[in-house]
Image 1: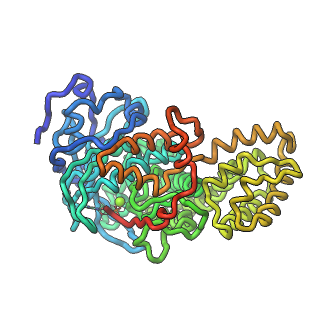
Image 2 (image 1 turned 180 degrees about the vertical axis):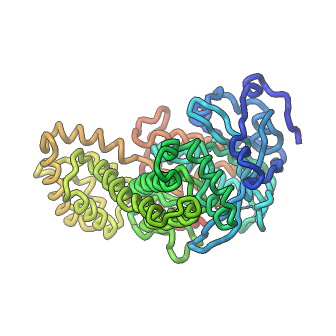
Image 3 (image 1 turned 30 degrees about the horizontal axis):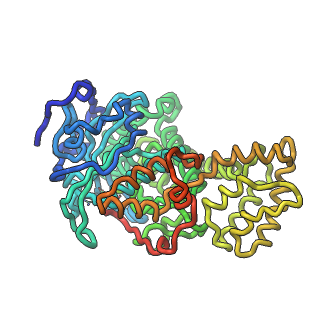
Length: 506
Ligand code: AMP
Ligand code: MG
């Protein structure tokens, strides 16, 4: 491995720090990446380059391709794999860890301190039976998924780029290998805390908690019980994240405690998906036979996971009542955060007690009628609140349009209670507001799949186009997008989309 190739001055000037590594060797193993042979670019995100403050042509330097395919290190990168544990599908799984991810170090960027991580760069001491690799399919999905959530304004780890090669790795069939580079203020998981609690390493547990407080929620240090304050802070971030997921129909698919970010970011994109038709019990992970991680289970699973985090923090919090009180904030925060998102989706500026029932009735109707989640809410932005209005394009989405008509009457009545009442002017203002909460496009599985298949045929342009589109999900006026593509992104999924099957690690 070429440890420090000659690099252009801007790369040489990057000041990599290793704060996480300063926690000490109990937290990680230092290990060099095993690069992809004959790598090439698959995709890169200009938005993430901007976030890092890098030149937009950063990727054109050959040492960049080497560094982000795991072939060489830029000066001062110091790769390591961290150790964590976790509960998988509700069962204690013991020690896990970065089986195919390597932390490269942190950079001070215009967006704050950012950690960079390779995923798919070979085996680590935590790989267990895995090969340490990632395939094109899962890496492109992680890349597009991260950027889609970021585009929707939902907290997420980010993806800088994907590199690929012809190296074949065994999955259900042989598939080509890839490396995705992730960027995040932190990759610390609930499972990191569970690891040291389970091992009885309370000194390390405390160092980790102090590290998180110092770097990400310094206000907690000022509280009477800083570690309970930390738990409460994580509960609040997680509640906001769950409400954001539910509001766009995002299903994570593998909400194991080792995939839960301590910062409340969407983390570890595997068999994730967005709802096509609204089916609350939708299971996006083909290996999730019990539906533990079904769409409608996500908020309560998050609480289950927070409970596991709370247990891990008990040696520091010590008092059970204090810990339970911190956890309870989730139970009040989540419904509030969810109600806030629902009101925004319905275009309501005021909060009235009947709003939740109005929203619940709508969701029930949508479920019975198998209505497309994204298309419905986008069309609802253009709801005409005049008493005689038929709202044909919306009611036509329902198998039983008269059910929608009855709900629409209640909605009209509710809109008349908004400041300014119901009027064409109000309709227009509401439409503009609602379009900021109801995306015209989400990264449906079939859209990702089409981009992956084109890439496998050597055409990376669909990934690039899709990246541009998912980055402006609230405005259809995407520059240079022809009507055919626009219709495909905004439209109903094709029949074959229902046959797509996604399961855990690939
Ligand atoms: P996941 O289901 O992707 O969250 O993975 C669970 C655990 O398995 C994590 O510790 C991963 O690092 C590890 N893992 C998943 N896939 C691989 C692989 N191909 N090689 C090595 N470790 C892996
Ligand atoms: Mg994981």
